[in-house]
Image 1: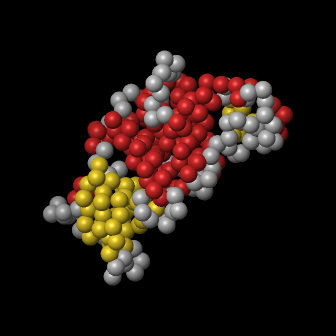
Image 2: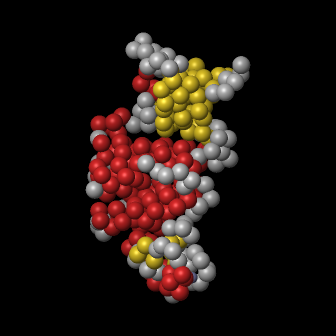
Image 3: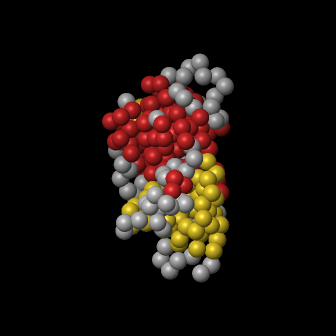
Length: 253
Ligand SMILES: [Zn+2]
């Protein structure tokens, strides 16, 4: 049985028998990994808290016939302040659900996706205001979608490639097509969402900055509206129905 190493973030777990868990992780080296953490539910387990969700570990894994087995885990980052705050926890679970949904086994982009996921969780754990957390998740969604080949189009109509006078002339976003849409195409589209230049400017800035230096125009309602536009887009590209957006609506609004 060959052993291998990986840096991975715990995304999801399932109980397996009385004392084991099946873990779903996203690793920097191999993309999504499904593996077994043996004995983790016993109080004497050395893996213990390292197999909690939203923890990043350096792992030693053994190749198994079906699922690989966690032999050793050493915490890289436990993102501990996330666990003391329900809002942070729900937005982190949302990020984890997206990574699990759009990540692949043996992902060619695994380093990029791991690093941007780690950054997002780290910033959610550090930041304190809801505006900062929303900004982080908007930035994460934009960059994750780009990494998996679904970058959003903000500069020209996503349907006909027509360039209006400048980006501030666009008033609609089409979640199905993934970008801004011109007035003519909007009439033919199934579903569009209203946007204006403030949304587009947040999307453009969030792709570049961890957090904007000038946040004088920061408005929770606007950020939440940007979050929702991307939520619709991400859901339109997802094969599975995402569960955490409903939790966000119930608990965070
Ligand atoms: Zn058009």
